[in-house]
Length: 327
Ligand SMILES: [Zn+2]
View 1 (tube, helix red, strand yellow):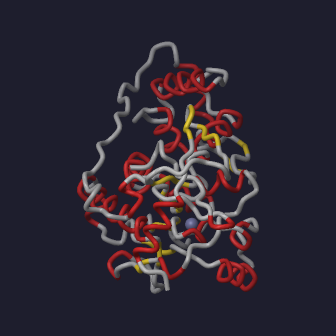
View 2 (cartoon, rainbow, N blue to C red; view 1 turned 60 degrees about the vertical axis):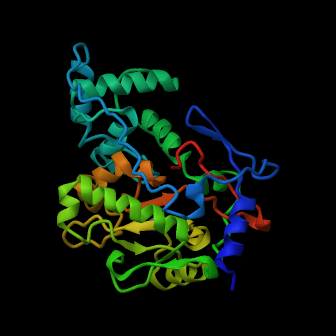
């Protein structure tokens, strides 16, 4: 059993930092310079207890000259045939809150202000600034968002993060678990989660009114557990669940956001994801979770990863901490 001191010292000596450049992170799995961790990475909420401020979003949703783009977006919103995550989908309503947040507006996706902000984002990103949501624009935006997930950055370099040491994980409290299975996470992830949920309930009345929202229904999962579930339930989530799930890190958690009638809390059916994407819980998370160091896998509204600590890498080296986004 590793004690808390050995855990902390391993974190302190193992953390490495990447340089974040224009939202894309240049990763070197080995050879990075160890630096002292930010206090928040040590899982000591008393050190970093202040709630980070909200980031400003533009509420100027009218923009002359963008009527045509807004009209096209309004048409494609529920009708665009595309494959944003490799699977046929129709329309981009599921992703509209995430896109709006990314381009910095609190505007309806069919508004001229949305089109103008999208064009400005496209221009800054080197994408044709037409103000239109398309497969190409979304793929670029998805790359930016996914680039904030240390687990994904490792995977992009052919490295599957090592499983967390189970002796270092903490158990959830009964009032923060949805379902009947205990949830385990790294202590720092729990601390960040608790700060985030407290802020969510203070800032969003719909979340204060339903204590089930934002509860955790899955945290750490061992590779053996996921492989067994894959085999027994024929539910392998495109093989990732069986071979290399972020849930092995102790940094990933699935949050209860509600669900559409007839679906489970983690059903990836489009109707279920659409319901979640339009829920107050998801919208609050999209706009605020990064204040607490969390990033989302946009295909799964319920899946969030804490970036305040690095995933473990094979051989005992630390992975990467998304320094630009962590609290
Ligand atoms: Zn998940």
